[in-house]
Amino acid sequence: MNYKDINDYELLYLIEEQDDHYRDLLFEKYYPVVSNLSYKYFYQYKNILDEYDDLYQEGIIGLNYAVNKFDLQKDVSFYSYAILCIESKLKDYIRKLSRNKNLMMKSALSLSYEIGENILLEDVIATDNNTFCSLVLEDQYHFLIHFKNMLSLKESFIFELRFNGFSYEEIAKLLDIKKANIYSYIRQIKIKFKNINDVDCLF
Image (cartoon, rainbow, N blue to C red; front, side):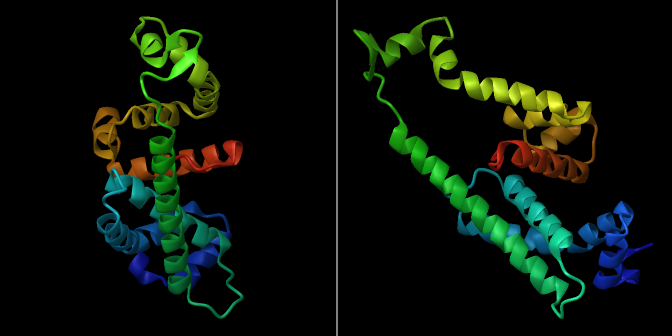
């Protein structure tokens, strides 16, 4: 069945019946909407944003939220509600990314910063051991390993590649998966991350 043969409200009703096939149809129908809004904000805030695909993925999460929360009993257009949810998610992502970048700049330490008696930051970083990383990042490292082990095998591969800076297109080629499916996997990974860590995953 083509999404053009069925309206939003029929699709939403069928999605409530736990049929993911119709969820995919609705997402296919709204991909151009998410894409247009993502491009709009990407070019508006390109000084903050690193990659369009990350912003687009947040838009997909906003659409997913709209699908899950829309009340069929209310006299409200799903299209209008979806736009509101997608834009809200995009703006929220941009705010958090901007805040994190500002925080990193404000908290950046000079290499001459003294971290101990007669021990400078540059001395620790210059050594071959991982003392600095273990002091600063040990908790985060253990959490990421724990989280990765909670994912399915394919999700864990995608999470590791994305975390290490690979683009959506590169991941799709490396794992021989359609790029559209990479969006779906990362959407699920971000939802799981949020559920166990109560913060958004910004990779």
